[in-house]
Length: 593
Image (spheres, rainbow, N blue to C red):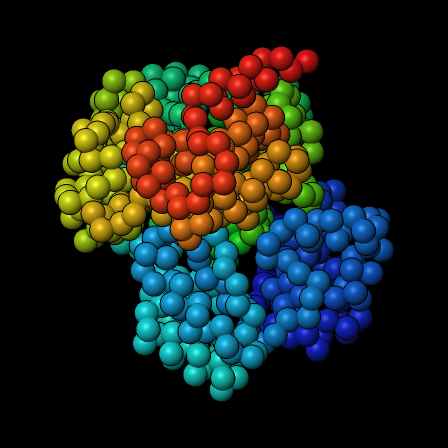
C-alpha cells in the first residue's frame, strides 16, 4: 500500500497556509513521489482542499508545474467536483443533506436557522449517507448527525464563538451503525486469513466453479453475474490488472456500505484479496466517497493489519508471486462517479464523465488495463460465500436470486437502519420489521429505482422481481407523493455531470417545472415540457443518469396521476396528453440517423 495519505489531517481550513509556497511544494512533492507512475492530481487537490479549505492560485501553479497540466485543465477538474473550490473559505463550511428523508425531518428549518451566521458557508448537498440518523450534514468535511432544534442552536452558538471544529463535542459527530436485522453475512466474523487460506487450499479452478454454482450477482442493483465478470477478467492476458472496490455509495437513501466499511472492513479486504487471487489482479483500490472521510482512518488501520499479517503485499500467505496491495482513493463529491467507468476516470484524476462502452472496464479500464470493479457488498458477499459454501449460499435466496441482501431503510418508520434479508423477501415483510405497516408507498433503489404503492407491497425484493441497490425510503400516510419527483428532480439537476446537453439543460428545466407545480404555479404546459424532455433524455443522454432522470415523474403519473395533475392551477396552453407526447417522442427517436 502506498503512503499517499499517511499524514491526512482533520480538515482545518487554514487559508493562511494557502500562500506558503514552501509548505505547498512539500505537499505536492510528497504526493507526486509516492506513486509517480499513476495519476495523483485529484488526490493532491483533495488533500490540499482538506487542509486549507480551498485551492489557492499558488497551489494551482505548483500543481501545474509538477503535473505538466495547464491551470485551465486543472480548474476543469476542480469545477467538476462539488467538494473542491478555488474560492477562499470562511472558517466553517456546512453542507446540509437535501435528501427527501432529511427534508421530512426538518432540514429546511435547520437551513433557515443557520443561514444568518456570517462566518459560515452554508449550502445544500446531495444525500450524505446518513439517512438513518438525519437530518445530517458535513461541517468542514466531517459528519454532523441528528440536527434537531437544540443541536442546531448549539452549533450556531459554537460557530459564533469561533470554536475550532476539532474542539467541538465528539457526540455531535457520532455516527451510529444500527443493525436492525442481521443474517449470515453480518454474523460472519472469521479469523484473519482464514477465508483466503481456504480458497488457496481449494485452488482457483475449484473456487471459480463454486462462484458459478452460487449464482452470486453484483449487489449494486443491476445484478450482473459475478462469475461472468470475474471469469472475463481472469481470461485477460495483460501483465497488469487492477481490482477496484466501488465505495462511492451515493444513491439517496443508501447507507449499507457505510456499515460494511465501518464494521466489516476485514470481510471487504478478504473479498478483494480473493478477487485478486482468482483474476490475477496486481493492485487494488478502494474508491471511498468524500462524504465518508470519517471512515478513512479505520480503513487504513484495517489495511495495515492485513499487511502486518502477510495478507497484503508480496508473496501473500507465503505463496510466491501472489502480490497484491490496496490503496484508498478519496472522491470529492460527484454522484456520477458511482458509475464504474466514471469512477475509473476519477481514479485517473480526470472529470468523472462516464465512458462510452464498449470497451468495458474488464478489458480496458484503469490506465487502459483490465479492471475488475465491484461494490462493497459484493466483495463482502464473496467472504460470505467462501465461508458457507455455494450450496448454502444459493439456498438462501429465491428463484434465481441467491443469498441475502442488505437494505438501508429510512423515512417514515419506527426502526430505521440496516436489515439483512434473504433475496425474495416481500416488501411487506420488511416494512413490518421496520415498524412501517401504515406506509402508503416505498421508493426502492433511490430516485432511479421504483415507486411501490401499498397495493403492491407483496412484491418480492429480488433481481427477478424488484431489484434494489439497497435504498428503501418509506413514505408515510401523511406525505404528499409529489414530494418524490420534486425532490428527485432537484437531485438529478444538481448531480448531472454536464457533459451532454440533453441532461445538462433538460435536468434543470425538468426540476424547474416540477418546482413550479409543487409551489402551485404549474400548468398543463409544464407537464408537456417535462414529458418531452424526459423522452428526449431517455433516448439522447450520454449515460444512465440522463436516461433515468424522468423515472420518478413517469412512475407517479402512471400509478397516481392525480398526485400531479391535481396540483395544476394555471391554464396557459394545451392540456397535457401523455400518450400523444410519448408517441411523438418515439416517432422522432425512430427517425434518428
